[in-house]
Image 1 (tube, one colour):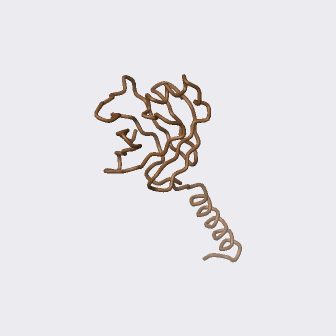
Image 2 (cartoon, rainbow, N blue to C red; image 1 turned 90 degrees about the vertical axis):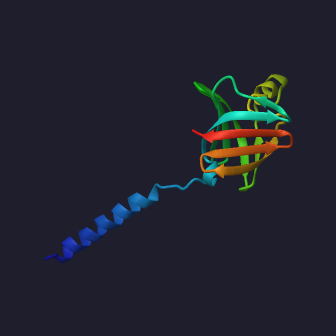
Image 3 (tube, rainbow, N blue to C red; image 1 turned 180 degrees about the horizontal axis):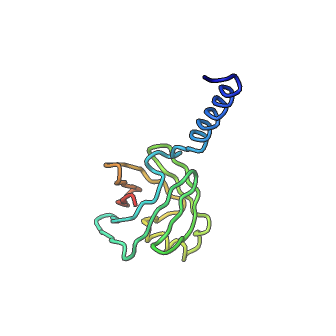
Amino acid sequence: MFTKNNLSLFFIVLTLFFTGISGCQKAPMNGKLDGMWEIKEIYYGDEEIIPSERIFYNFYMHVCSLSYYGGPLTDGNMSYNGEEILLDFPYMKDEKGMETLKNYGIYSNPVIFQVEFPKDERMILRDGDITIFLRKF
C-alpha cells in the first residue's frame, strides 16, 4: 500500500512530469506558414522564372530569412495576419540588395504578399503581377 510520504512523492513526480512535457512545446505562431519553403517557380506577368539554384524562404515568429542551398542570405522583419504577409529586409535597401531580392520574387522592399495554401505542403505568394510557387522543405 501507499504510505502518506510515498503518495506525496508520487504526486510531486507526476506533476513535474506533466509540467515538463507540456511546458516546452510551442505551436507554430504563424500556423502553416512557419518553416522552410523552397521556391519552385516565379511568374512575373507571363514570364516564367525557374531558379537556377535551390533558394528558400524561412518563416519563424516575426522573422523571414532568405537563404540558398548552402547558407543564409539575409533576415527581414515579418508581419502575418493569416491572409497577407508584410516583409521588410532592412539590409537589402541598396541597388545590389534589390537585384538579389529579385531572385526571390521580391521587386519592392518592403513588400506585401497575398498568401494561399492550396495544399499543406504548397504555398503561393502573390503581389500584383508576381506569383511565387513554393514547396515546404
